[in-house]
Image 1: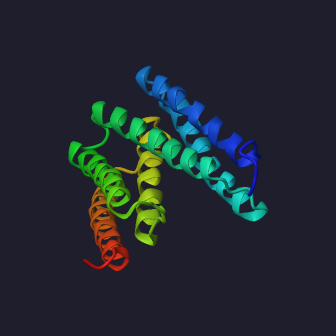
Image 2 (image 1 turned 45 degrees about the vertical axis):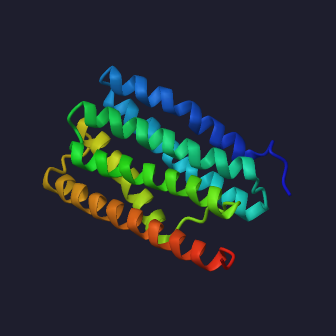
Length: 185
C-alpha cells in the first residue's frame, strides 16, 4: 500500500486549491483565466490518476480526495456558470440531482450492506468527461476563445441525457449488487 504522501495526492490537493481560484475568476468575469485554470485542473485529474495506477500509488485517501475534488471543481464551476446564465438551469439541476442520488444511494447501500466499494461505471465516467468538456466549452465560449453557438446547445442535450442515463444506471447497478449480496431472510 502506498503512502498517503505521494505525488498523485499532492496533485489532487493542488487541484482542490484551484476550486476557489476558478470561483473567484468567474465571479470577477475573468473567463479566459478561469478557462485556463479549470482546464489545467481538469487535465491534472488524468495525470494523477495515471500516476497512481502506473506506480501503484493508489491510496484510500487519494481515491476519496480525488472524487471530492472533482465534485467540488465541477459543481462549483457548474453552479457559478448557471448563476451567470451561461448554462441552463435544467442541465445544472439534472447534474446536481444525479450527484445527490449517487451520494444518497451510496450512503443507503453502506447502511444496508455494511460496506461500500465505489466503482465508477463506464457510463458514469463518460458522463463525468462530458460534464467537464461542457464546462470547458462554456468557459472558452464566455472568454471568446471558441465561438461554438449551436454546438454548445447540442452538448447541453448530450450531457443532460448522459446525466439522467448514468444516474439511473447507478441505481440499477447498486440495486442488483445489493440483491446479490444481502443475506437470505
